[in-house]
Image 1 (spheres, one colour):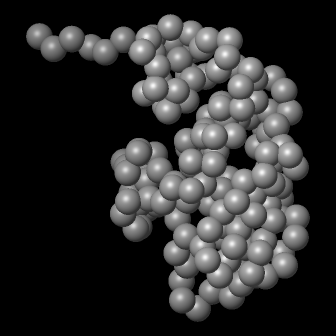
Image 2 (cartoon, rainbow, N blue to C red):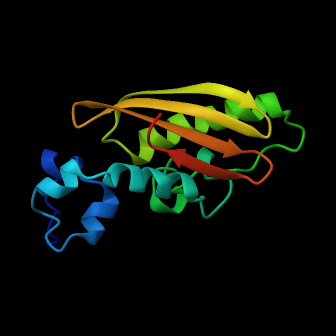
Image 3 (tube, rainbow, N blue to C red):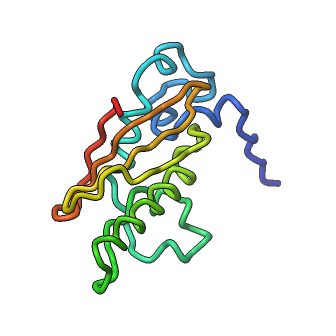
Length: 151
């Protein structure tokens, strides 16, 4: 008879995948340094710098929440205008954070300055019961993100 995996505790749900992979004792609660460090910004930077492995996974509900789809898709329909791309990226950021950064609550992503080819998004959320705010800059010409932690 196959054994069933033990369900995650609520403490483990607050630890990111990257922290669990980097931790020698992933079944123990977060250590104090992880809570007080800027680890969250490092992980957000990695999330925004990553790209999904396979295009079109958004439509496949069985894998769009998996590591295969980790990262922010940067492709657009060829006919999309720059203004439309800004809203597409904003919505992708919201979806990405909901899928892969569940430690953030009350997430709000606003377009701050749509000054092409640079577009600034302000991300505001709650993390560890404290407000978190950061500025994410999208370079539309280079398809690159820059994360500024002090928004």
